[in-house]
Amino acid sequence: MAIAEPDREARNLPNEIPDWGDNFSESGDLIQKRRRPWVAGLLTLLVIGLGQVYNGEFIQGVWYYLGSVGLSLLAAFLILFLPPPLNLLALALGFIYFIYIFLVSWAEAQRKGSTYCLKPYNRTYIYILLVFFSWYVVNPLVSQITQNNIVHAYRVVATSMLPTILDGDHILVNELIYKFSSPQRLDVVVFKYPRNESQYFIKRVIGLPGETIQIRAKQCYINGQPVQEKYVIHAGSSPADYPELDNFGPLTIPADSFFVMGDNRDWSMDSRTFGPIKRSKILGKAFMVYWPGTIHGEMIWSRIGKKID
Image (cartoon, rainbow, N blue to C red; front, top):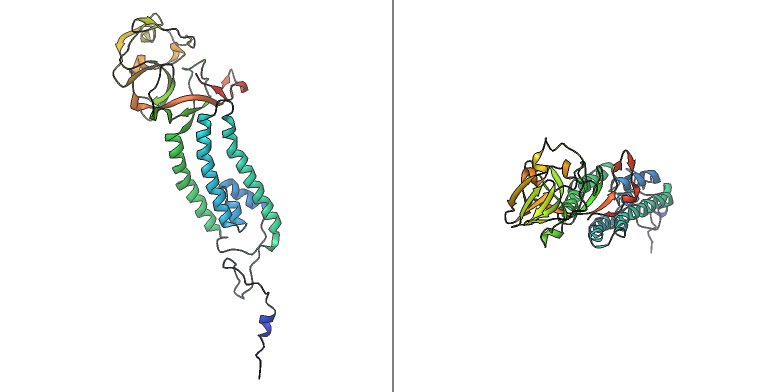
């Protein structure tokens, strides 16, 4: 009885069956291409997890990317609920996570070297599509969730809140707090400028709904009683230019509205000029400086993590 022998070329093939992801040349040979660590690192800079895709670890790359999204949401909550300066650790979480993924992708590319067999997704257009999807679909969605509902970062470009907030300070604003409560007196709040809602202002809440506010010779009165304000300075414009800054009212604040003023009373456009702010226009409460501004060109490093109150 004759026994058919396997084809001579077949006997020279490896015993392993290549998985679905291997690419073949027209001759049927596996395509091998060196994995370069610097390319893996660069792709990780563009999108966390993309370096793993480049290294042939697609599922791992997806999990790393989802981990970065989840970490962003977790950090937003930790920033709000941990006391300063511990909440600065939440800001460092993302950086630490990125360094870890960067090093992993770099080391994996070094390990695979020139023995790597290309996968179907190892294509330039695939990388471009993944970057586009991350930058223009997922990232805006995560930003919408965190910045409009949890915490938002702003840079202050005015001196109306001196000495509490410096020109150039980068601050964090709790945009969750007023979804469950109302602004309180002395809260430092960010709100939409009534005369141009594309601009954001930052001031301190002084008067509450239903109260009567008056200013006489720079002294603020609420319901006829003087308000003690240790945070206030008077440095800036001439009273002749803005007489309402020194003498205002009396005015009864409408329901669901708040009277706000800057801490630098002589250099602040606030409710004395544009009236009380509606509750619906207040975006959140400023609570921390995470990167300092400057005084006379000098960076004040001690302000990092400073609580705003």
